[in-house]
Amino acid sequence: MTQKAIVWSKENCPYCLQAKALLTQKGIKFEERNISKDWTRDQLLESVPTARTLPQIFLDDKYVGGFTELRKHLLQG
Figure (spheres, rainbow, N blue to C red):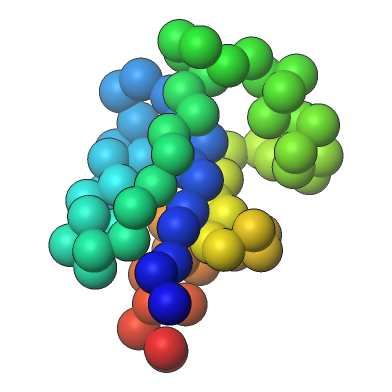
């Protein structure tokens, strides 16, 4: 089964870049939702009401969290 991800991000965000690089390295296709460009902070908060930092990541439609949580999730499994 091919995994897919959604990455809420913004410009000049080192953790966003690391998350996208990790997903690419693992061969996981992702949709980037950049709140500096085509998406808004309000749209992010509709999706993740508790978001205070970026990135915010969903993997196969399940909320994972930020970069640290993504890395931990992928290493475990």
